Image (cartoon, rainbow, N blue to C red; front, side, top):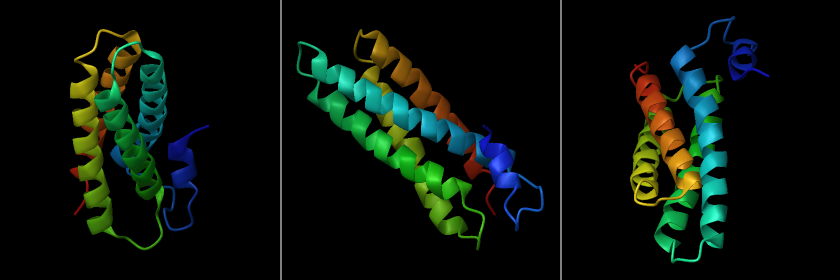
Length: 129
């Protein structure tokens, strides 16, 4: 299924899609899943991973909210979209930096996804008025 296609089908979209915004929403959904999975894997690690777990769970929650807000088409609210994308960028890079401190494959994958999501949200943010 395609997030882009779903957005294009909205009655007010008229087939037009803000491509960077659609990509940011899609990757925010993925990032939410990756960071939740990483937090869960961190729980099973023998060392204290509390800081990584916290940052991953915060990132997941913010990414989930960003994905939802970024897909809404009815009644523009650029201020809220700007705020949530900015929060998502910050959370993603904080999580990526924390995960990069650990030598676990799940942390490496999470950090990569977080950086990709943060970059995509920056590009989407640049499309706002």
